[in-house]
Amino acid sequence: MNHKKIETIFPDLHKISKKELREKVVQTWAESIRKGGWEVEQLKDVPFTLLIADTKIDLIQHTNNVTRTALVIAKELDGYYDGLKIDMDVLLAGALLHDVAKLMEYDRRDGKVVKSEMGQYLRHPISGAAMAAKHGLPDEVVHIIGSHSKEGNFAKRTVEAIIVHHADFLNFEPFHQ
Image (cartoon, rainbow, N blue to C red; front, side):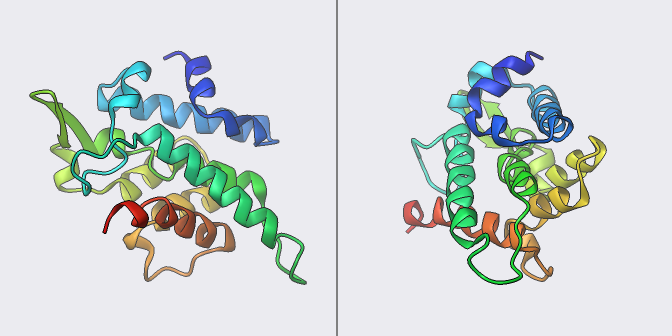
């Protein structure tokens, strides 16, 4: 798997200051691409959701804008309120990986992207969190991935997880009405 290609499609990856964390994010994407049977070049053909028929928004666009939205929110909050501290590296890693396992949740059949066999049983927040843990990502990042969607509604989310959760829905709900 060409890690340089992954780094190219996620321009905010370089904003993660810790090199080891940045590399683990790339490794996690590389494994998801491989396990899902995709090529990096095909990712522009993967819709960000199957809940919106014929969406033109792809998974990479969605991931990049969720990351940018989360970063804008975090920058506005960080330091504004006494005692509120946001770990930008954790936030960026979690935002970049929040939907990483959709590549295993989805499959291509007859020229269409549909739920995979695994996706029938396991949604991407759970499989993504497991994959991130396997790659040694910090628990705080695993938490963001696992709690960014409805699966996290009963979890006590960290501030970084709250931001990614809302950034994700800000980049979904306007298109799903």
